[in-house]
Image (tube, rainbow, N blue to C red; front, side):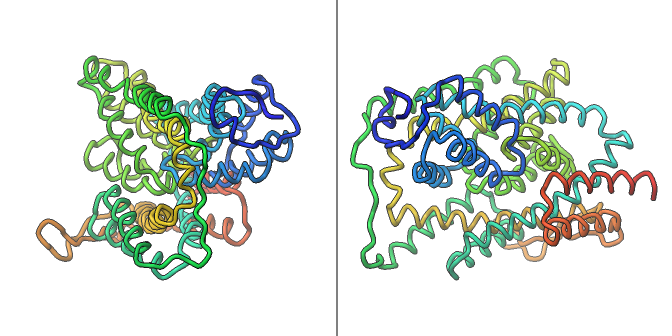
Length: 451
């Protein structure tokens, strides 16, 4: 029998578990998951399945997949949302909070430590050589993500067209990422309305309706928790980058469909060109750092927040500003996951089988493939070439058709060779991300010190 809970979900979940986890057992298991969650969302989801379904037998296969499918529809890190969902299912709100936090905290501690070392010592030869190799490896990882997600999402000509349109909108016209996502959802909805329903199609709904006032109170509470730092930062530290960090990453948390890869190009563009928190190549360094740490890849945003707080710290000590920036970025990014689970899940689950909603979300997923392809091209140009300059092709008034064009004389053949070797390790020999990054880092060190 499952653990008792006063939450409505516990009475409806129909959990078929042979072992009832105590709260300390839940804490121990998710601490273990948080420390071992390397390799991106696919590996993290598989790890949770192994521990929670196969080893512990806390929930059955159907309930696990039900939770996973719901989390895949939400913006934000789906693996952390799944951890929160499972904790919530087993021990109510406190279980969800602990499971969600333990999934993130180990990686957050590591990324803040690495960001500190990076901010202080990135100009040294050892660190520069290491990250030179990691950048090239990350390029291969991003290309692999384009292929993997594309195979899953682009099953029709309509979805392939959406992906192409998203890429063109971002790469050639530099349209805002949120606009591309919203347009894709609208197009998917309109397209679904014009396609007749399949014969025998069943719309799945949950019959029990959750208490409206209780869910509204939960929604308002978690929104208040999420936004609470913002007025404090604007009132006490307006001369630092911290208020803008909270504001920017709070916006990002609402549109991060498709995981970290989907928004990195947009975040890099804004952080480099608008706020001047980072230099172009430094986003690649941050992605390489995040790839080597446990937890969601979107922890790279804490690296961005750290550098923003470190470089625009006002009267604060730069390290204090950096640590606050990293923590604030994490807060703005991960707290919404608790909102979706604690307040939204009972209502959204009622519409899981709704044809129009599914069509809109599948259109977003298709557009995300184009977004990630744009990220891959952007990264490739900045890895292989040391100089990339925008070139306007056509001026259409409010929209200017332009492309980033590399300066061919700035080709870095060492980076190109390491990127090709990394691609061979991933695509031909199927090495994991950890091994690929380790070898590429060593090659980067050798390139800088031996060649």
